[in-house]
Image 1: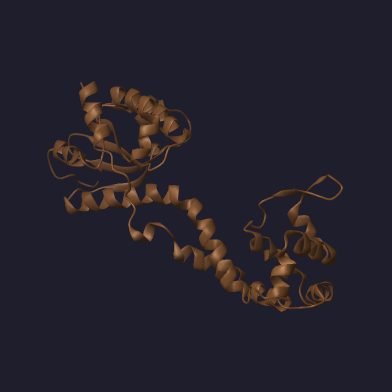
Image 2: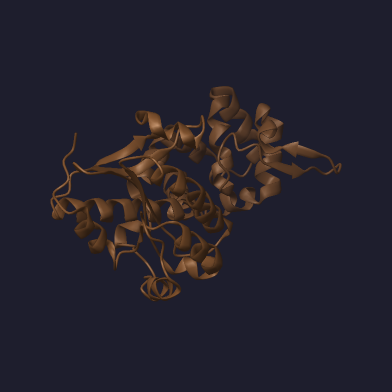
Length: 283
């Protein structure tokens, strides 16, 4: 029977957590940023027509007559993505969707003036909206860092497995295992699966450099599914996690640590690899 951890083992685990797993390419995904900007580039170049125009209203009407769809990307100039359904308080005190302003040239003029973009255009502090939106996209991309942190951890673990000659599969569905009907009807995807002659390991991997309610939810969720998986013959749940974000969820992590026998961080990952006992075989 799998043995849970002691208080001393948990304290050691916590002392080993690392501050970051970020490499320099973590901070901005310029490939994604470039793709996003390229999708808007033609319309942004057309909007450049408005820069420096003394009669903004006349310029907007001319551009509207030429191509009213060009204003679909106007929200990005205030760092709001299209179809975000963001609302604002109108002068009459009512709440309205920002996107509804782009159904008429008068609405476009109101948007540009009331957001302050009119002054930016007339002063030519922006000279090229393509370059400007590239900067906006770069700023918005920082919101994706939490997701990238997890993906970076997955790549790191995959690299360690590969270097140690461990065969694995990624994004394995619980539906592949009849025994995992015990998890309920919802499909569960595991980050990694390693199969040996003796056992199949279903592995979740994550990294948290900052706190938040998600950490408590993850620990609670894994505490629930691990015993169910481990009760099935030939299956074992493995959790590989790291990051000083766990300091803020120490209590919940300790609860999970006492329930889940196979919890590892980057410092102890070699123990898991050694525990496999033989080179894993992908089947």
